[in-house]
Image (cartoon, rainbow, N blue to C red):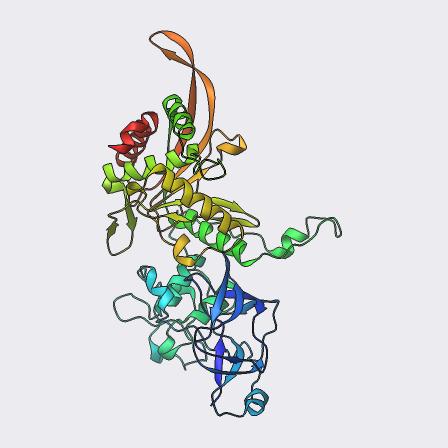
Length: 450
């Protein structure tokens, strides 16, 4: 019996991907573990390996095809002893309605804690009306909506209330394809009326309304790629669901700059007389933030509806700009690593991030993040928290400023940093302790080693 090769879900956030390149052609024999194609996700280009042995009977999705849905059939494999031509002739390109929905128990989704389902706004008894093809989502009698774990995660990422989605699964269960339709505006019920006096979020302008404001021919429409869509969805959900507050402090980094110069001058050389490492200010920032979280462990947390996750290690995400967006590779257990190790790891991450070669486990998770715009001359800004993080540190440029010491005006190398906090997990005083610990460490780098 022919074996369908499906578009894989290469990360928990992946819904569609681009089939960049086929490395095998029709008629080629493959065995388990052979790399057969390259897939572009929203964050990286990754290789896909065959999981079965056989012969490529038919390629249904040609290379270069964009926005191929996860679990769509992309090729057909004829098993050993099967008629390759017959297997290829029987293959048909799947339609949107026949494409299988992502399985709720898919392995990538297990990496993300499942959020609690939203309470139903108005549950309708099942017997009140004939069951249509897509029905209102049913509840279990305790205000919780029947939905798959994948559907709940997708709805949360898209900022959509599950109670507004018509479920098409068994007994009105909300499944992933229902969330997909809701994101496009289909199958989405009108929101429940807000209580009197409650603030409401104004709807965003439609594409048609925006285009009507500009003269035809005065603009070019550049379609969004997967990365830009993912950034938009996640950060929109963040600012709408995470209560942010901000703490700014100025740090005197004169000692840090002196230590950095001394360490770089003493760096060992390779055979070509090149230094084996060259520390940046950002390497010190990463280390200081990692150690600060260990000293204020109640800030090294992630919020979930069922409880607080208190992390044992400081896994620091570092924002890296790349064509079309940004990505945050994670320095794992940063509190245990030397500055030179952090520097080497970041250089490797940055190079592979810009080439879209990072693996999902290298940029997913983390306990906080650092965003540094100092190299662009920005001296102060605020950053949006990337859940499941509870904090993010925005780092500005270091610059000479006039400061008053012992009644005298002196020049000092100052750097402003702003900590964004999720108020559900980190209160004001606790956030102040964290940024205070960071300031002490960054101003006296020797303390990072203690």
